[in-house]
Image (cartoon, rainbow, N blue to C red):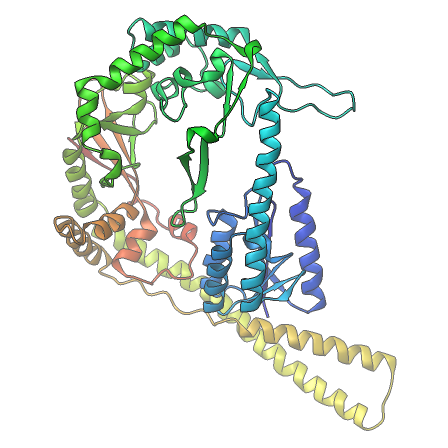
Length: 546
């Protein structure tokens, strides 16, 4: 039985040694049970309340591929503390034929999933309640309830008991001047975008040392986010304005606004940076903007309730000048985000989204997977993969031969023992041969390598598939699925503009996805990195001139 080990700790404040401790205990358990450990998975400083964990996702993929039979972990709550997630993980692993064994509970069954999942969920709820109770006490005492705002530094000192004092902060004079500047310029009629640009032009570091963005200044007025809405600047500490709930589909936290009567407000006059007059000027201007016809017309559409349309190139476009991403400019255009918002890039040209999409589809269909390059790739890939499989087949044949020899030796030893021969050396030799025989049996239980056969006309299969996908984009019923499939074929699209103003697109194709789209399932069980290695000449980024 092949075993895999999973380890996790929740907080960045915990020690990395926790991972090694968990893995070591699991490895010792596996050794006692004579289970060879074939894989290890881990997640460091990631909460068990989320399924969005690289180690866990890699574990589930490996289980689906049949790479191990038993999953060892310290306790069920290492896999997840969420009751629904525990059940989902158990179902997926059971479907893959994998048994979960924990050091705390033993072999996991449906009963464990129900009881332990409930207990872990209650533990999380109780922990959250205790944490909030402690934070509330700190806030009511005028200390920070978590995090820090621009304009302040955290005070680090020891209390009379010798322990670190938490939640104290003081005004940072340099950052306080920037806060006052932002408030003054906004009150005088400057937009958050213009203010952010000038701050970046003056090389003033923004929050967390990053570039300034208009969203960091504007924020959300009702939620109290952004510099212009932070009441700490007028000496009021507001806590519990928002709560966070987990989206069951994505596993990510989503903020919700609490009723105003649930807010905790404490006066901290020593932290005031903005005077009341300037604060009221800013609030008055925000009110004018909110009450303007333009904003009211936008709000009337209730755009936030509508699902945003997903475009073909969302998140895939890159600027050839600065390497940054592209963002929407109006309804139908896109442009370099750094150039438009931060003014840190000179490539300010905007592009019609439909023009870029048509150009990329043309590249996918007509330029990628050229017949000559694909033919050379198919030959090289098949040769390399089957050579590796041939080595595995030779090794398997040697194991079969060794197994037969050991069985013959064991029969001789069994006969000697039956005839009354009893020596210490004989017993040790018998045990050694039996252990080796069991090891060989486990290795031979692995499925034999199957030959890799890529279709010789792979490029034509690919071209037809892309053409069908492109046609599917016109059908609203199946557009989302076709869109997702096409996006997997693209790693990045880089937009270059030369000194003469000529535009060139460079498309990086995802080779393994292109092959799997053309001939589904042919790469199952094959490391994607090996596909890239044998790609060679003919699979570099392809270009297109607009």
